[in-house]
Amino acid sequence: METIEVNKNDKEVIQKAVKVLKDAGMIIYPTETCYGVGVDATNEKALKKLLKYKKFRGSKPISIAVSDKEMAGKYVEINEMGGNIYKNYLPGPITVVSMSKGLLQPPVVSQQGTVGVRIPDYPLMLELVKEYGKPITATSANMSYRSAPYDIDKLLEQLPEKSKKMIDLIIDGGVLPKNPPSTVLDTTLNTLSVLREGKLKFEEAIVKNRKLVRKVTKTPEETTQLGYEFSKKYLDPHKPVVVALSGELGAGKTQFTKGIGKQLGVEEIVTSPTYTIINEYEYDDGNILAHMDTWRLMDDELEKSGLIEHLEAHNIVVIEWADKFYQEIHALCDNMNIPIYNIKFSYISLEKREITIYEG
Image (cartoon, rainbow, N blue to C red):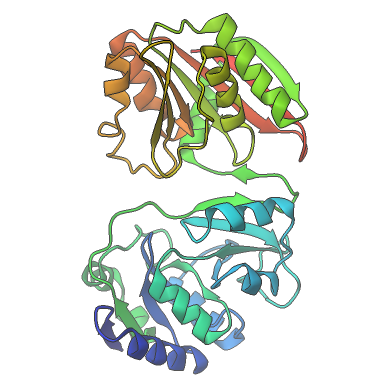
């Protein structure tokens, strides 16, 4: 087992890793989420070695890492929904599940014939996969059901000697930020399904809320109009309120927020705040509509995000992906005596959305 640090010659690191992969060997490598374990995802011998390393996994498939959409397209069917995710959210901490084209085999392919694909947001790994020319496995380097590894020393402490001996090369990127594992997006039906703990808590809680509106929209314009009507009927432009939005990518959360902004008198174009966390829009001589997105926030970052400051300033705050911090947001509203509306966006088809508004 050889260890090489990433702050040395990247070309040397890539050359050594490529050689190991070609020889059906195994590498440990850093990503933007945690350390992964990689073998040639097309090599049966290498995959068997990986399964011995990971120990028991049941029927859970192993995802693959590719360098770009073009490489992914050689191995999986990329439909319209999948294409949108590749275009707008990758590279990044997302695993896109698509139907296999039949060139791969278990454990990379699931019992349902699907494959999870990652494009890591880690330049060294993108270059490595590109240089190798084929996908490698993209599963965390810990043994199955152990915690995700962010530190090579701690990883090695947890591994039994048999597993350590299976590793041919460790690419040491130091102690990685404790980012959560990738979000898994299932696109096989040309719709979107996201599995997150926060989402489940959100949906369990809204059952207890009072339902105000349920409507199916067929166009982005109809979704915007519903946001306009909601704002006109339920929001006071001069009082603080939280509008908590939960729904999959492309389900209409930003379009709905555009309607709120339009009704309030915002003159700017409302856009997604995914990368800025909060976009601020002024209306009516100094009032603020704060449009927030928690997609990229880590567990301890909500308090520092600016949310509390906006509520203390009596602003209207619309939060996309609010289900990720459902409990924290509701507790904050309770403590500050601020009303909250929970709004769930669901796909009916590629064109139709069901939008349900609850009083929190």
